[in-house]
Length: 113
Image (cartoon, rainbow, N blue to C red):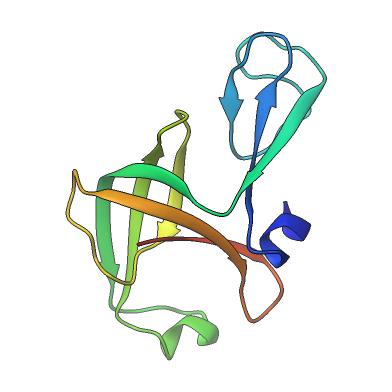
């Protein structure tokens, strides 16, 4: 997942047995418990905004410089729901494209635009 984000790709798991797509990654399929999920990476994944909020306060110093900080829950076209940064502040119901990248600390993060 981190390696994919470093390459600008968003990776999800697809079960080789039942086809269920899951994120975040797990050792077993959440639908059928098969233990051999495959990784699928893409530059962007389409989705729809389910909910959003704007943070005006943070105890984390890294986020303070970015306040106010918009976040969104996005249902990917494949099914999973992900939490993303949403700098363009899309409205609920809007179609967005979700991308992965590494933040300043080297952690994989998702962004919806």
